[in-house]
Length: 221
Image (cartoon, helix red, strand yellow):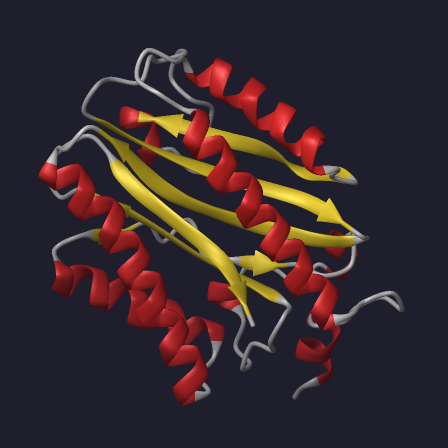
């Protein structure tokens, strides 16, 4: 590994892979609990309030990035974009949850997409984001490729599956808090082989014709 890439994968003295995995488990528990409480007729802002309540109940240490819960067409928004308005979740709708939470000094980051009702195209979109994530993760585990190559693979597989990958969302570092001091950049720009327990793989896709998309992210470990 080059000195530059080694610096991008630096960690602090407290870092432990098992604590990273613990942080991910806790974050996923929060995502699932919040999803269970989201229902048609609820506004995005109410869902975010629910998210904060669940995190407090689970005993989070702190939030390291804002909780994003997106309904309907807002599922096309990137992390840095604001939602349009404060939409109400419909009876047949789509939404995703994206959380970044510190547990025992380590950064959990997880998110995925859910549907209300039984719209088959929305259900297919949500499932496709998870399928694409799994395929890209398998490529990482089996082929030893760089972060750059991972996202080239992801974009091509998304196209083959009939979806459009948002290449403005290309994963990022995590570690013992705060990872930001390492200035590692995006996973999709990392030209080395990503190490386990250090990178979040993010997949965001758009429906080719309709105004919604889906999101799935998790720790490569």
